[in-house]
Figure: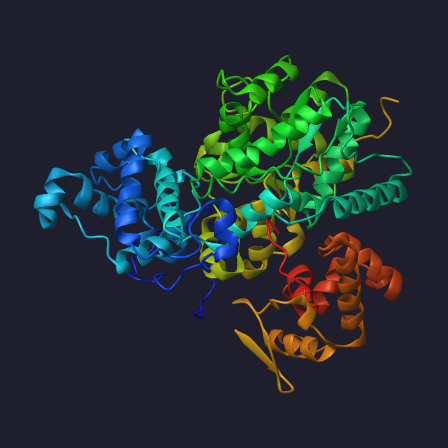
Length: 513
Length: 110
């Protein structure tokens, strides 16, 4: 791995300066390639197939047939340049291939060569190129320098969604046995064990019991973390990082305290012990459905009335936008999809289906069903990081912009000192943490550190201006990414917290006994 | 990739984790630690041994919180915190200590 320097933060400005381009600056960045053990359980060839060129071009044709959006995106770019300075990876690395338009062009030039009249006969005139091994390797490198955060698409006058293009490119790569180890190894673990960690049921049970003891010692109250409890009202689906890592686990404790204080009946499932759905990152609809079906099976078996999603950014996109047709969580299941239909009938539609944990906590606060003592967080000065998939690919509540308002209202109900970062760096303009979309792996540390630059710059401004010492988030990837990259920018690792840790520290237990 | 230790050769993956758990012994752990720039003390061994015991029971490494609590019990409450574990294993107790203990790398959003 090449040596690299952490970019320097500027004083007194919330946004970074657009860098001069450095062609090829990140061409060496490439994640570990998935092995047969990772690929075969996902239905992909074990390794790069011999006729990869022909197979990749055919797969591109399939995708163009299946998703008209991809063809529209590939056809409609007019090279206006609006996206060029919007990607955090470009801003952090200065590599011009990390400009969204250039990232799209990697696929577009091959599309033109094989699927447009002009490209077939006059390739040079229209920037069309053959799919060579060099182009394929460029795809592998640069489609793994996109976190599929969709910030560029907010500024594109045509609404071209680079995330969809990256997903399509990864779908092609997987179809020829050239996928990424990090994502595919994880998806294989979900299919086999039920979560990204590979945490087996007995280990999960032991961990939850241990946490119950901790809460009892700390608070004197018997707060439960129920597992596989048939007949519970709510099934909580949360990222497995919540069972394992810091600071996530304090968020899990926060959810449990809220459920306890509100007197709600809830459970988790060891079979469906993962909210994350990395199959979305690699554009694999079949694997995405298989992952979502675990949740349906658990919900049917446990007989729950509601399904709630914990703090996980892209899981909320998968849940909010896809679970209905994938698994029957919400309306839209196919008529011949028996189990999806069963689940649609089983779930209580007087609550949002599915519901985000922040929506639920917000409602409980509004109703006075839980009480919070804000002074419990008086030692903290808090800002909030909007996670990209929540901000730009979903909603919360019943008001426009609910996905921005609700988490902030929950934080403000739990603490007195809240300060937003600069407007162009939050809400729909939020900068990715730098680790989303399947990039949260050690072999991509350079791109993660550099891609965090715009967020770190915005953070520095509120740290300097308002003495902010706590960065709250509602996404497991964001939390882990920040815990890792904050020290590179001279911030303390422990300043990143779960929103529900703030809530958990402030909620008055037993208020509803 | 292979790791050569005292005339033996054991297979590791591209990130330096042992491929076969059964290959592990203390000598190999020492070599893995060296490649990580970690100098093994008695307290490092406490962590590594706990990880291996836990793994034998549950087929996974423990949550960091479970580890800190166990270490607090063994080495004293002042050492039962993640800050101390990061002093021992600067790249993070979950990944670095697992590698030295010969366990697979924990995966996911961690």
